Image 1 (tube, rainbow, N blue to C red):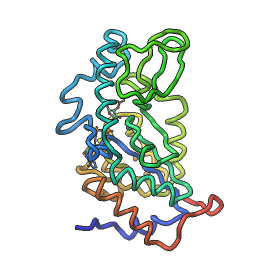
Image 2 (cartoon, rainbow, N blue to C red):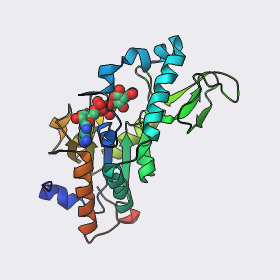
Image 3 (spheres, protein in one colour):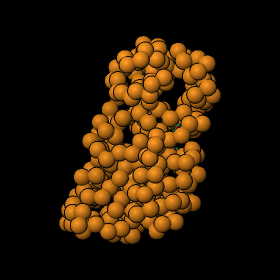
Length: 258
Ligand code: OAD
């Protein structure tokens, strides 16, 4: 059955609306990436404090790398799904469209999105704990403790762990985009991890029309003007198809507004 969108949402799906799409693990679920919470969620099977904290890495770096190696292997073998592709289309259509993701899987890039703020880092990046050197390493599985090519120090996955700060400036850029957008989508996130989970409330407080896309209501659903219940891989392509139907086409930066 086609998804019903409100006339308000339809009226905003035309440039020069400024759009922010905020995504979480649920957008990659239909590709085969496990989510963190809910049925079959990673945090039901694995313990956060053993795998996703700086203390866990300090105590058992090999075990942590092994787990990230397993996740890399899984992600390397799957493809972006129609939801990722639809988000990439949004970026082509709206001159001012910002993608803010909590996902580290890289599927948004593989689907063609270019302007991405990655709040929780990138599973394909590595960082030296000694000298801070950053790099991308696309090998599916890295040796259990790869040495830094600059200083020989220990490399760690380039992701944000619990208890760590987000990458410098990234959250601030996200807030800036959210505060000035007219349409905010929150897609496939439980909205339980802060500070990312604040974004729907910030969007609403600053006057954006907030739309949640999820198979169930998230912890931030009360901030949404409209909740579209269903799979992101079905709902987002319908929204993207609607873009093609509108005559307005892509806006230019000069004509942008909220
Ligand atoms: P969660 O696993 O907490 O939530 C996934 C959300 O996706 C849930 O609300 C599901 O209902 C929804 N969902 C599942 N399948 C869906 C589908 N096909 N279409 C739409 N929605 C679907 O994932 P996040 O909110 O991303 O952080 O988790 C936030 C952070 O917690 C992650 O970035 C990670 C994790 O611990 C770190 O590792 C720092």
